[in-house]
Length: 103
Image (cartoon, rainbow, N blue to C red):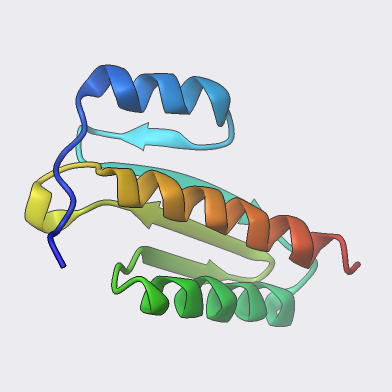
């Protein structure tokens, strides 16, 4: 399977305008910090994001803390952001919405 190619800055900016919880970190990545009820909820969220990433063979950087998870998407071999990063960021949002609705 061909790896995705780097997106132009305007495409990323347009996506960010519609996904206000995500922020650009330099030119290479986007990130979002998610707030959860406690450590076990945060860990469960990380596992679900990790499984979605594994299915697509594309893995984020994840920082886990008590009630907090920061997810950063980037495509290292493309040296920037690709369509795959944006798709997985949207999947991450969907996982969070289904996780937080179980409270």
